[in-house]
Image (cartoon, rainbow, N blue to C red; front, top):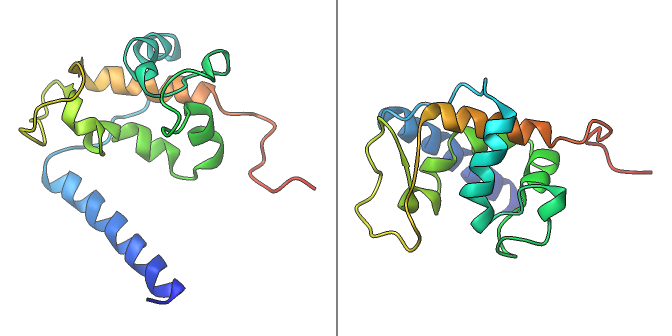
Length: 140
């Protein structure tokens, strides 16, 4: 498969994923939340796998992306945070009030129960981690 076909396939899969979320009745959270509450939620749930702040950059599982890396280097970070509960591996152990679980598989970790307001708070917290000096352009 050529490079362009790989890119086209990846974009098509991303679009199909977004459509499947909509058809399943899973709407992204609104992202207007409280960053202080989001930090507390991240500390209690997300930190078991992710480094959630510079102060905790050596915590979590080494193969999982840190919150700082995602918000500063991934162009679609906000969409990812708004819908993380429907993305692998999260849908196995995250439950969001009012949204039917996406699987009946048993969780390999303690279940975390959230509301869409909690998700908004997590997005607001992640937004607070953005580096204001990062222009997204390569350094000279």
